[in-house]
Amino acid sequence: MKLDMQMKLQMKLAPQLIQSLKLLQMPILKLEQLIRHELSTNPLLEEAETAEEQDEVLSTSTDEEKDQSDPQLDKINWEDYLRDEGEFYFKPEREKEEDRLEKTPVSEKTLYEHLLDQIHLSRLKKEETEIGEYIIGNIDENGYLVCSADEIASALDTSKEKVAKILSLIQTFDPTGVGAQDLRESLLIQLKEKGFEDSLAFRIVKYHLSNLEKKSFTQLSKTLGVSFEEVQAAMDFIKTLNPRPAMGRFTRPASPVVPDLTVEEIGDELVVLHNDKNVPRLRINHTYRELLKKGSISSEETKTYLVGKLEKARWLLNSINQRRSTMIKVMEKIVEEQKEFFEHGSSHLKPLTMEAIAERVGMNVATISRVANGKYVQTPQGIFEIKYFFNTGVPREKGEELSKRHVKQLVFDLIKQEDPASPLSDQQIYARLKKEGINIARRTVSKYREELKIMPARFRKRIVKTETGDSAEETVTPPSTDST
Image: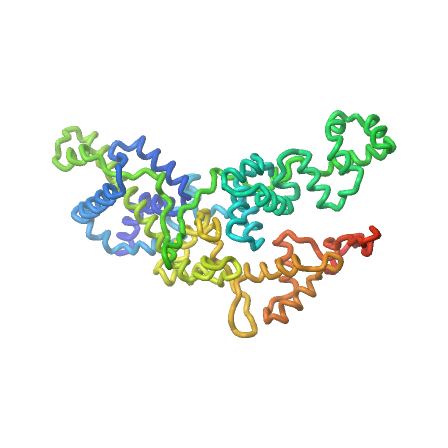
């Protein structure tokens, strides 16, 4: 009997619960779109002029619902619904595409996210990071910068030299060729990265790209004083380069990245604010509500329709309010746990799991996951996806733990500071970390290096020229197997 009652209540509450879960999972732009759609289709909803009006409506709605509620509903454990991964609500034969929340795998990163990860690993000053984020925000899906350094400098009220410095850094990022303003620049970046800066192909792209596009190989051979075959060979090599360095490699973002939350330093405190200034404030239409309350509607069909719309409007209002309070509560706890990161940067990021935050805020892990995935926060250190703050720990001999991202940063720093003529092997990096009391396996070093898009030592070896111009070191021909 009890089980039967529970199932009936589940069936009654399923649509509203699904709506609450969907709202919690939505990034701010999609939430804004949904609200505007509801405003245009639900006559019981209208836009409030102030946040206070919305809060008043929420309070009134809550009081009215208490009077009209089924006493059995008070016994429902709402956290059980959030914890339930879908045996009842998400059966494949019943689900709609838009309700497929639990089963959708996390998509691969967008180009924007991929470049942000790299800029945040570069240990720049705050101003430099902001310049980098602005540049990345103006790189299109093909990998090209859509504005000039002058325009960026003007927009940020900074010098062109500072912008050029950060742009040069971004142009070393993966994918090779990213951040260029035109085809010539992108191809030159790719050739330079491959070590062909002194090649015939480089000269052709830099000075004679128009001849190349016209396939004027005979003219090129005369101009450059080389054979037709050499021009053809250079052309064949240039064809291996990517004219659209980011095309097809990354998820196409459905919308621009807009942070849901902001962490600001106010006095000596870090304060979490909700970035919902562009989201319409809602309230229940007073006229319709009074008509329903006084029983002034004679048509049962109309009354049923309006009651349904009223119920839907109230659930939407409460779901929005719940989403906001849940996100702020979770982010406040993250700020508390990762305070040193927000004050000093990524090198101070601590190990932190969703399970730990769930326990501390009294929610379940599924709820924390919905808050963390696909939503961003603006911080004094830059813009981050909320899930960035969750990472596993690496033990040290002293008993403390370092975050995985911090150890990865150490690997990045060691490689950045290495002698180009004698780059560090993974074994040498492993030994240096071990000397610092960081206990990770050599294969983990290799994994972190690969995640950082850094090639093995033998491919990083550079030609170092003496004052006379002779090569003191030679590039090493890549062997067939990795011995790094």
